[in-house]
Image 1 (cartoon, rainbow, N blue to C red):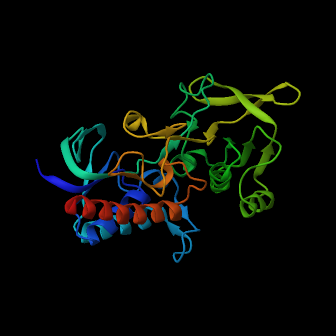
Image 2 (cartoon, rainbow, N blue to C red):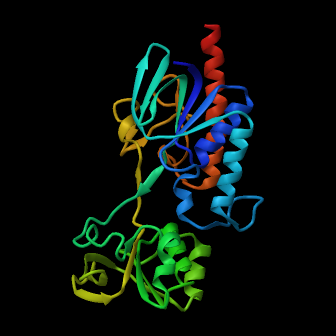
Image 3 (cartoon, rainbow, N blue to C red):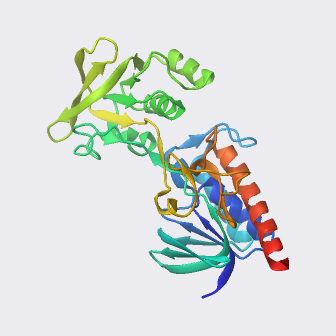
Length: 305
């Protein structure tokens, strides 16, 4: 088995940037990505706050990043990482497509959307319950839908849904949305958005598909019924860190780092997976570049020690 310089687990913005910087530094580098290069950002159709690009399609941006990686010799393997073993100064990653070993690792597996865990959510997933407005919005043309959540993701996806839906109810458990000011301004300016505040979803109901949701007012406890045919859920993130729990130190599932280094020498973390105050494409890319630089320094010291 060939011993690589670096394996990057996760091929989103952080992983792809790390792959670009590492391969440009002539490190033998492999990215292992479970689904497709780009990661969770591909669930959104556009990005408007990545410097220098203006409003651009996420798929196009990720395709450019992938091509840059490959141009400088970085390999990309579509496979699921299942286990990591540390032996001496190298790490072996067991995947669904075989085993790969390297002298250093960058963990960049990102996050996934949290679920409500209420009756009807699992039963109607794919039949009115969705976690991707970009993917499923066109199926709800001229219909009334609900978006659950109060952060940037929920509010931006609600705005996206107004391109298709007749009305978008934006349900949040608090009195104020947590999104940035500019996003909240856009909500107020869009007549299709109907805020439903101080409310939580109790149940999602229907026969063959979603027909209505039950809401509980968090102040009065009153139960009400909201007729909708679609429910889009954006209530937080869960780190994709299950296979790292016995490898590196975690905090509520997120990887703890000090200047992107974990508590295990040779293992670095980048992007949304790690404990960080801001989870954006630009911060993920910055993490990826820095993690690759630190990995190169680590490998250089390893060779001379």
